Image (cartoon, rainbow, N blue to C red; front, side, top):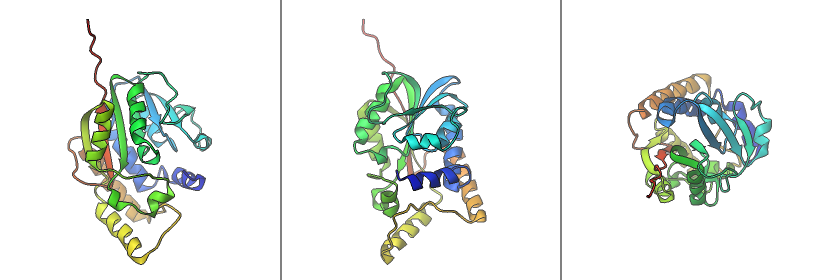
Amino acid sequence: MKTDELAKMHAFDKTHWWFLGRRYLLRSMLPMLGQPDDLILDAGCGTGLAASELSSLGKVVAMDVCDEVFKLKEWRTIGVPCVGSVLEIPFRDSSFDLVVALDVLEHVADDNMAIRELYRVCKPGGIALITVPAYQWLWSSHDEAIGHKRRYSATLLARCVTNAGFGVRKLSYAVSSVLVLAIAFRFARRIIGKRSRESDLAPTPHLINKVLAILMGAEAFLLRYISLPFGLSVLVIAEKPQQIEVE
């Protein structure tokens, strides 16, 4: 990812409705993800948003292929920083109780290899939480600006994780509240032919930001109990099967 986009994400990750929504989502999902004192891998940790939320659940290893992310903040109280690629995770098989990859798979050339690596380092009976952007037909200059290779349907993401060996515990779309607005915005840009080398991430007027953050919080609460049929993101909670000993 471009350095300027990374810096922009860091500046917004505690105030912008999108990142607040990610925080609310993680907090809501925590009871489904593991037990206290779990060892957690945050693969593609970026600005540390997920690691900061997951640290309440256990010890977090925050891994990213870009060492610049570890210069953005003090990581000592968040997790153990580690430079590494999701395509070749530098840890032994069955090392982690929980593996998390939030908006990571869409950045790598071989997403199936990345999921196989997440499966490899996950302990038997362990959990994986993965989110990706939804709908290839929503592809825009935003995706190009932040280095996306593809967008996903729920069916495609489920197939990827089951092909790697995981079982699906929860599959849902997310960020549903603003889908219509996002579609209108991106198609309007296509119609007028406006392209940008920057992402859609930008300051949002305070009142609108607050309303959208409230909607994200309500949606995160609902996602604990139901799955949503559409949204800007796809979410899967998957489980690595317990090993069966053969006598």
